[in-house]
Amino acid sequence: MSEAIKTDVLIIGAGPCGLFAVFELGLLDMKAHLIDILDKPGGQCAELYPEKPIYDIPGLPMVTGDGLTKALLEQIKPFGPVFHYQEMVQTIEKVGDPLFRVTTDQNKVFEAKVVVIAAGGGSFQPKRPPIPGIEAYEEKSVHYAVRKMDIFRGKRLLIAGGGDSALDWTLNLAPVASELTLLHRRDDFRAAPDSVNKMKALVAAGKINLAIGQVTSLDGAEGQVSAAVVKRNDGSVFSIACDAILPFFGLTMKLGPVADWGLTLKGDLIEVETASFETNVPGIFAIGDINTYPGKLKLILCGFHEGALMAQKAHRYVYPDKKLTFQYTTSSTSLQKKLGVS
Image 1: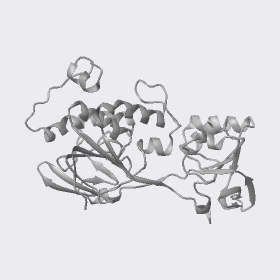
Image 2: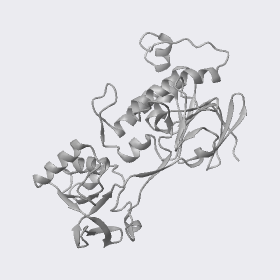
Image 3: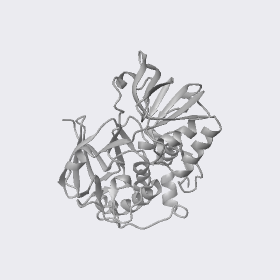
């Protein structure tokens, strides 16, 4: 086992909430390392919808998942966070008061006075459709996420699903694809009504196609799909020619090792108190989508608020003998010096 990496705070998850937590901790002179199972920062924003617009971030009328990630990374530059990608935390052990020893599946060891779990819904993976041989087409012409819209430009695109992701990407990719077909097993959608209305307007205008049924098999060679064979509800079969397929059947969220860390859980979520979003284990906090409490809203902006209050309590563990004086970045020269703007 490797020598322990020492830090004030270890953040599990490098999504928006984990990134903003670095900022709030940094203002209070706490250094942070971040661990993420993905190969880059941004969490679900970067992995699932990097180019999808987000409209409810305060002060930003519209920003993409990728844009928000880049802005947060720029904001936390002054605090020099250290990232550890493609690693999953396996164990958390209390070895001091306060001190935790954390190990990953890559045998990396950390020692931190505070642990912040900002792991979104845990480790997640898309639900694979029950189509024989689909694995041969994955990441070549079958994609479970849109990382760059341009790869679908001028292509015949088949989107399968009836939820928000399927409808959102139908609307966003309609101007990009040469031909787009939305396929759902029934003419009843689980997506936002406004999205459904916009989709039906595009169908009525002849700009996209809508088909009812389920894909039973794929035609193609060497990973490149050429058509999807679809079975209607009445048992009849037809074929949809396509160059790429986007199946949106939801995500399977798994807590993974988190379930074994001795934290109080409610379903697949971690229960916290609302003064600092601390768990039942002193020194371990949970912020963002992975926590639960009365009135919880799964919004990025709520996770930002949780990170700010978490940092205030974390300071007590990292600096038990140091009085914390609340300051505003607009008026505090010491905070502005930390940010490099004084």
